[in-house]
Image (tube, rainbow over all chains, first blue to last red; front, side, top):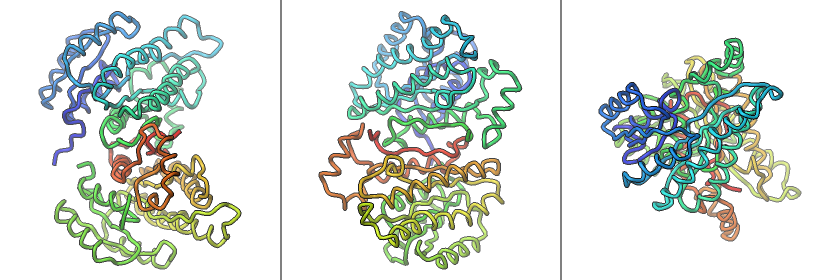
Length: 249
Length: 247
């Protein structure tokens, strides 16, 4: 028996060019989902990767390009997705930016930028997509937050708060949409091996890894596999939840 | 097939969530020591059918949670099979509802014996094997009543809260030995336990849920499957609510 948990499902994933998003695309494709893979910029490498995955797993994968902070681009992207006239079963809001700065050193420009990308943009994007999900009265929304949204680590007042805002909105969304057949949950990754780590010093990274019970950082696929659970029907009675994928912190 | 080649110990397999977990595990390629209270012909037939349909082995194991000697000999039986144990799912438990001031202490101790101490005894034994193998996943079934409180369920909810404390501490102790420990907190699931609750209380609870319906046993066993499988390799010490979003 083949283990494909997302057969005949259509998914939108943001932030697919690298890191966790890239891994989610691969694992979703492997599990039979058709995908609109969103990224900011068109690159040859990205398009090739998607094509290879599409052929390997016999699924449809379409690149969709937009800058999260450009609301006109976002609207166009939604129109592109709508023009495919397909049901949307899954939305994964994965794209985000990181920012490390002490509270007193955080600038208003950065606060605005981080909140725009990590909170306001996924909020608006989800508004568009939920409208489409409501037609079919089923769907699963997965928002990628962070353990920083729960723990309040030093230097993370802006980033953590933007993810905490997303986390709270997800819970409200789950409560509002549950009786319409739409679930909404959050994955809170701990320290994960992505390019985002480059914003931290090696010393901080090592110390954080030592602080995990498992004594290792998460791999992008560790996070993607948890997203897979929430996207699939295996989690059909799970909504409004925050699942930490952090190796124990 | 998320559990191909794995061997699992599951308690409380006779009915409800346990029976569904046994079935889900077998369908996903896991061999199972299926623990139940006492020998039962229908149960043995059920196990045999699962074996045939899914090409796995299912071994019924019988013990009473309230009898430590029985647990001990059952665990010895499992060890004597000389197979690695990859997964332990502690499902078996009991409830006796009563308002706090009406609970006889003996009854409270009984509930803790069945819902906490028996689980700890089994888990000590099995995780010893897991540590030796350097791999394992333990899934404890707690309850949302442990997190939220539940009218008339003091003994039950407190015993299930104890399970959460044990889950968190054990996860910290065993993480660097390759053993993960997590708990699930089911909400109101359509089982015999819930069928015994007055209908108006159930309707009120459903109204508090985002999904506006009772959970199904399969929905709990599918979440257990996730925590048992490699999909959750980086998840430990967590308590996941399977409750349809109860407010």
